[in-house]
Length: 160
Image 1: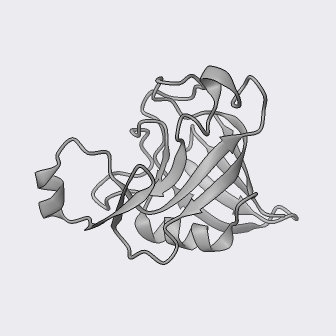
Image 2 (image 1 turned 90 degrees about the vertical axis):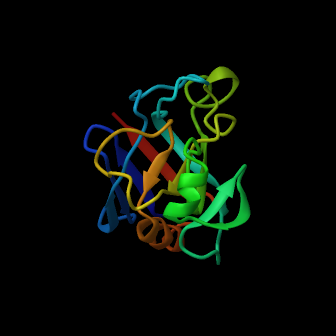
């Protein structure tokens, strides 16, 4: 079974097969507040997770999502100027759920209830720099490619 490995220190993601061969890799952007589990922290949670939902299959590159729903909008600089405070979630969403009770699952540390995703972001946003609100941001073409290679149930290991 394929596994996603995310290294917060290196801001790097790899998709590995069962033999640990790299099938896909990408530079990413994770939580500006670093690694952490708590609700409201703005941190990226560590440990073992699983993809609980794949959202956006078939949507165009730069499709805008709010509350995991396609808004009908396509991201553009003009749209960004109209909504300067919006945290752009674009193209695809891979919604994570924690697998480790009381570390990243249940209560105030529950990754799923924290709405932590792997998702696309505007191409103007830098990669390789931690500056998200806790999610794992990716280039739109990278999240499309990764989404096509994984399924619900794919395990994700996030390490600092």
